[in-house]
Length: 251
Image 1 (spheres, rainbow, N blue to C red):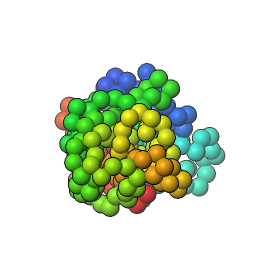
Image 2 (image 1 turned 120 degrees about the vertical axis):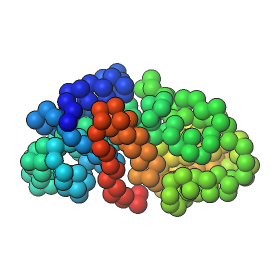
Image 3 (image 1 turned 90 degrees about the horizontal axis):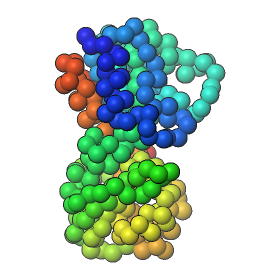
């Protein structure tokens, strides 16, 4: 068993939770406490009812997620929201969420991990969002279809391609999750190809008009790596078992 406070303090410090501004619904950090001790770590992308039901099995623990329980803002404690809280509290399951702090982490972040998986060269932070660089860009020299295959292997599933840019790629930007609506700003940053999770319908024709390739890898699929790595880091540091609770959305 480990102290929940010790684990949370470690995560807050390493992820710079209090220093990184995020969307109001993210509510980064400890979202639900327990009795103060944890014996295991569970990682998941979303703090959904099905994930919490699965994570509750096994005694007191800590569920680390990328998307927490409060994305819809203030809500009555009824229905599925009530069931999530009750199940977690009855099981002694604490819940910790990290959105942008995990996306941008230089070692454990979703962006850098995906960059490493596709062998992006000389990755550097890019794309300013309220004073924070929320993506990475770097060199990747090769054919567009070659990058498509590499990305599909890295993500373990299909990737939707908008072949709006050059067939021979040289500069790639990555912002995991739902950043497809930022194609114009991304193109202005000087990349010829953009890897993200998902985007609105209009982002495809706009990318064609801007002369940029866009690889839509799936919101869920592009954001599984960070929580896995951070769970393993915490588990190793505090001598706890860990597992990943998969619940893909296909989006």
